[in-house]
Image (cartoon, rainbow, N blue to C red):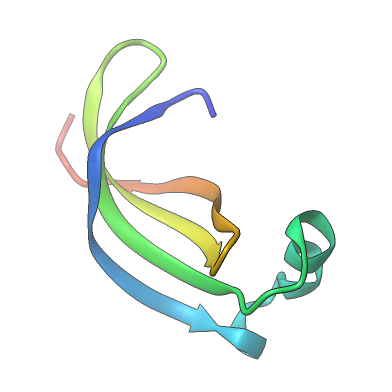
Length: 79
């Protein structure tokens, strides 16, 4: 990751779970078999140039494995 989360992720929502997660095969091979969920939420991040932005994040998560493959999907502030 070239950016870092500052603070905590808020407004967490479930997008997909179990067989609804399209990349489940990849996640099982890369991180281990588990009941994967795709989630989204908002957070403040520090970009590589030092700029702070409020963004929407998407990631995959499983019990005992944690958050994997965090992605910035949208910038929510107007900069």
